[in-house]
Length: 224
Image (tube, rainbow, N blue to C red):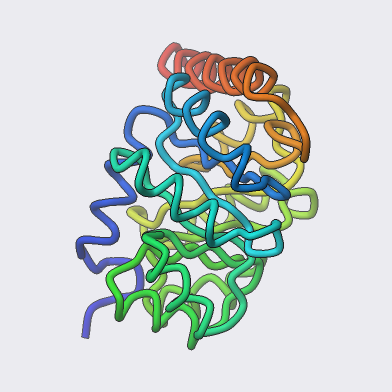
């Protein structure tokens, strides 16, 4: 049997490629289909390659379909995926990414069965290892407000080294470097990047700020 977190499948490779240049996930909670393409273009132009539309957004599947068709070079999918039937709906819309706030084994398994990237939310070692055993592609550390950098460091010490850890919740340009130094591979960025009603220009400005913060964190790590 393959050890948890060690499988090398197409979903993992797809996620690694998407995160290679800029390991930031854009969480567009509340976006509408009418806003999706302009905001998506702003993100892609700023170097972002992973875009998540939470399913509790208005007409989320329509936005996912528009983004997936317009930006095939990006990894587009859904957040707040709680049920197996929602995995099927995201796949039918062209989404290739399934993100959840929790770690439901059936949702993870269905995403894996369909060849989709699965990022379940975990907060403890028990949840992390269970999610990996179920087939998670990587782990969303959520909510990051209660998972401090010291906790990320402790998780990194016990999890397989190739497991991707992405803190989500409360991540800003000011604390990104500290989490990175503790072992985070990337981040999900929500309201600090996009709030409902924000125009594409404002999103572009925030997207560039986060991209620069990531590059600065990498430079600082390399200088140590």
